[in-house]
Length: 342
Image (cartoon, rainbow, N blue to C red; front, side, top):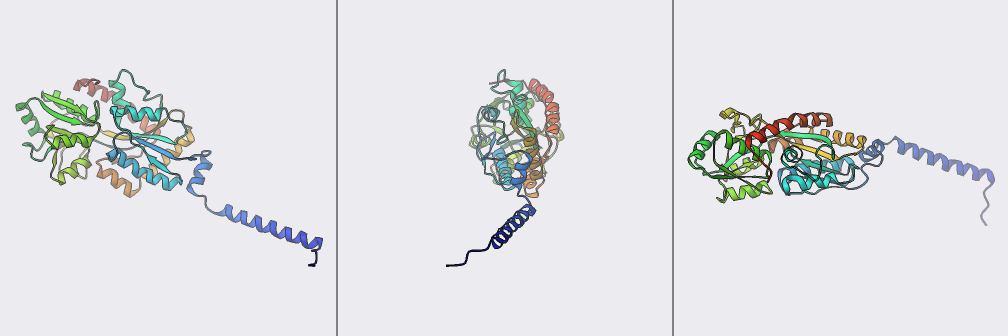
């Protein structure tokens, strides 16, 4: 039989095992923490499950594409799966309501435009959500403005020529991605300012309106600058002017409405991110920092610029201040344009 170890030998063996275990624990503690571990340490267990981004609009639309860019970066940063679920229809009301009623744990957020939180609040007498009380602002990712576009063979190439043509051809129709959208407001403002007879047609998506315009169902439309550029390069449409405070670098030859003698069209749109109300502040802060860091990434900035947006990445306080400044301007524009709920 093998000799039984002496008591002293057993004690020394146990001591060696304890020391080895302690060294291993110390070595693990010295390793840098993974991003997800840091996140959990900073705000409890967040993120502890799949993160859901709900962009207003259709799959493949500008907000959906941008949401997927951020979703990929967030997944890399937090080590947690991120899914993007676009929710089109009802001028963004469906998407906003879905997020407003989600659990306030930071795992569901809304990527949206001013339409859902400013325009709808002014136009709609009753919404299923309160745009202020039911949401926590996280960040404005970028700002920009829509472009007035026409078929490539249209007999006008700028806003002035379009107005002159429209005066001689009353009853022209145009399409946008929703009643009360920024594009709709700009279209109606142009109608009233230039004394034109125009008819607005609201679509569920930008692409649906463009298909009808190119097919001859509509006379003209509004477009995101990235769509206008792609379709212009493809010989299917041309941009007449941009409604915003500046030209866009990807289409520098397209002048603003102001440059063409039309005032009041310098109200920029934006892409904003909201969480449900009562989401814990540490989680809001974590979201804000992540979105700001991602917005600064060169490849993300390039994507935003290609879509005609100026990268921003604001704080919640800055987002709130921008919202409060935009609200009365949009209300005034809605009144001037004569836009009503449908």
